[in-house]
Amino acid sequence: MQEKKHVPKATLERLSLYYKTLQNLDNEEVVTTSAIELAEILDIKPEKIRKDLSMVGKFGMKGLGYDVIHLKTNIANILGLQNYWRLAIIGVGNLGAALANYEKISDWGFVIAALFDIDENKIGEEINGVRVYDFKKFASISRRKLIDIGVIAVPDDAAQKVADTLIAAGVKGIWNFTAVQIDAPKNIKVVDENLMTGLSALSFYLNQNSN
Ligand code: NAD
Image (cartoon, rainbow, N blue to C red; front, side):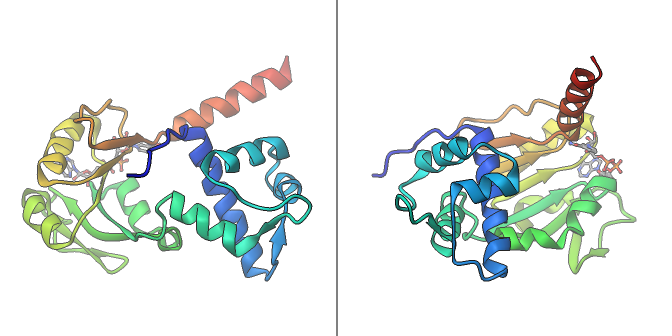
């Protein structure tokens, strides 16, 4: 069995930046690139890019750089972007509806397969061609729609109960947008997303520059 390597979240985030950049280069019909070119585009040190890539495989040849399609395909494989993971969004309010309308998600190998809410005014509606179902029916619908990942976009006080339902229904991963620390068994991967973390980092940099 292949050994599972721990790759830090920051590296995974940079790998998705490399993937996006390689996708753009490929669209522009660029055939080869280098750590230096990627570094210039992304404003990340070339040494860091080489180190990130060496953590996940052997790419490129000295002096020849990287083959754009080869590297892009390999990063997509590493990130599991070619598996077409199937997502369900729970909570179709401001945030959930915005995510449901984000069409580029399919470029990254994700499919939004179903939406769920408890609000009767929303159940039965469609957003971007995807139907909103009653969350009470999550277990049966997620089985039918082969849901892999549950996206939690409900108010904080409902988050853990929603997570428990997702876990009981067999989702493999949770993308949590609430401020709640989700309690989940070890085999369920929970990734927290928080816009405020990014904004706090910006505040930190602005403070540093003003001192
Ligand atoms: P909202 O009130 O607009 O929408 C919440 C939706 O969840 C509503 O449609 C509601 O009917 C539904 N809901 C409530 N309880 C539910 C349950 N038990 N099961 C299924 N659906 C349920 O809220 P919003 O502004 O979209 O925010 C949603 C969550 O996302 C909040 O926790 C908020 O703090 C968080 N948020 C996070 C970020 C971020 O950066 N992570 C940014 C904005 C909002």
